[in-house]
Image (tube, rainbow, N blue to C red):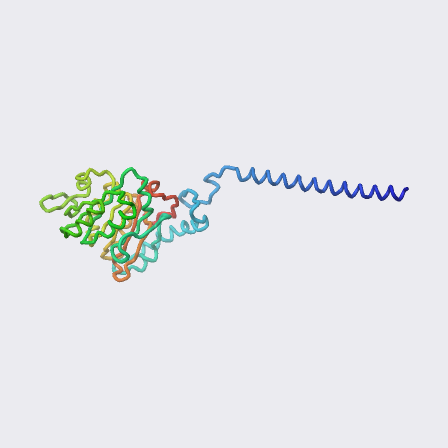
Length: 300
């Protein structure tokens, strides 16, 4: 009897011990689950994110470590740009350039070869109440305007300009792209007898208060009208720059930057290195074109 009692007590002790262990395990699991849930619900503030000298909002588009590296390189790029020479040597300039903002839907529109332009999130124009495209320099090739309008289902109004009259065939292509053509040379002062117009006067002629997309390919005259370009509201500037030197080109890039434009794309001309394509977006238009991530501004 004593033997049976001791055996029964032993089994009861083991069972009780296992029950206690089980309860302890369940308690810890439940505690950690509630703790983890509470932790993940804590508000994330700006101070939670590592920031550099300037404040940059957190981004869920790009890995934060990659963003931090971009931002650490800002001062290095600015110092390196001080070495850009005033001659036809683009080594330093082209090695330094990177986008200043992340454009999620970056696409090249127009002819695959010469004449195409890199544009940021063109689908965004569909949600705009109205859209206006200005095209300076046609030279019998409205392929960019046609491609853009095909992509956006003729959403925008196209205003095209060239110092020379265009052929009837080109005029028909522009018209089919919901566009108009005006013989005009953009200048610092309006002289209608010579078909010279300031950019402001051109916009007033059409009753436009903002330009969504400005395409520029005017064979070096962009330097003559740079003050005109920054005097009116423009969202995106897609421009081929014909610099006399690397420093000459850099000064125009800096000017755009000073007036609120951020570089989002550039394309080096493989044949003529002094000619390259640059695409900028103004900070006031970030929301319209879905810009959420700023790598960091270094051009100014």
